Image 1 (cartoon, rainbow, N blue to C red):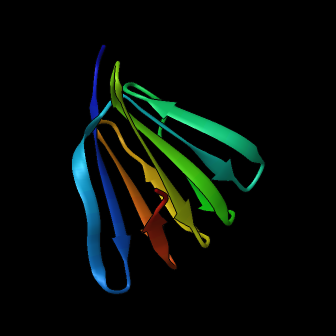
Image 2: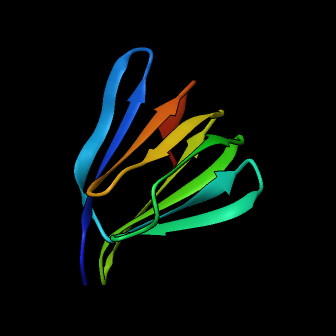
Length: 87
């Protein structure tokens, strides 16, 4: 499966930077899943859970407290007000 670079940044600095297959979160207009080749967009992010899939068996879950998501050709950047990993 194709991948893209995901960068998650908070006011304290980078929290995550890696190649991933899929990012799922809640945007301004509802739930959103981003995969490689997604159309470019920019949207606000609502507080809630985000799911990052890096491979078939590699899924990480985190919580974001709002922010801004920028989807470009080969990279996705999440500027989060606050972010934490769920256990």
